[in-house]
Image (cartoon, rainbow, N blue to C red; front, side):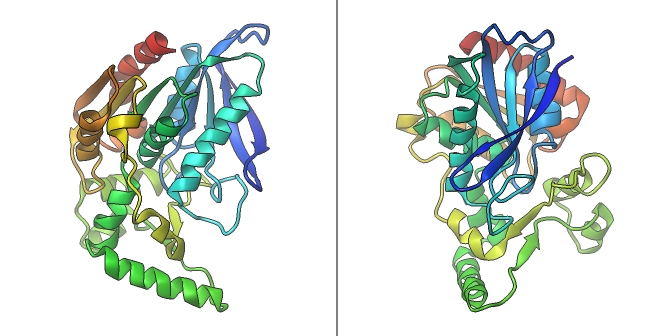
Length: 309
């Protein structure tokens, strides 16, 4: 079995909290390929990025670091619950810095994996950090597109006006407005008229014993969400994304858009080596933790990283 160490390291002006997964039979005198695992939006390292993908990759012989985003989870940074794509991408760079401070990590065999929003952040990071030698996006979602579309009710200008007004109020002393991205329960969502598979399955994952964790807040600081509105996770993929790429999606599309984003990324990436795996009969949130689709994904991920790291 893999072993788990809780670690912290310095970020910009605060500390990041992370879980370091070490392979079975770990020997600190040897060198290992290492992977950074990035969690979804509104999530934490104990949900899917760590307890599912990092753990299973460590069992396959990789050193894996699953970290909490700045301003979220157990990591530092104020104000809380910021979801700023530029900082989220920067977090991945600091995670790589930490891995490279470990004598048993091979600097030439660094990979990256991310789930949902973390998958798209991983893509963006790989374009500007050549230390990443191969990457995998698991049901990746382009948060900028989602903000401009579903999360703003397809009216981004009105949303930006509201965010501006709220940030002005907060600058003048009003309380921070932290929104919850999801209803409190699946039943509450249905009673509110919500029918989308992604919304209801996300609620089932995050708001029940299935995936609920103390730091999985599913929250966002509304007035700071404007940072994502003009951001595109896949910008410049046609020229800058050249590392080996694996995209994993389910074939049951939902409002968060991972299915369409996965195909867009696959089409736009300049990578000479790229592949897309569609888990037939499975959804976005099935790929978070359900044994059968996760096993299907891992059957692609493990040989991919073994070949390219």
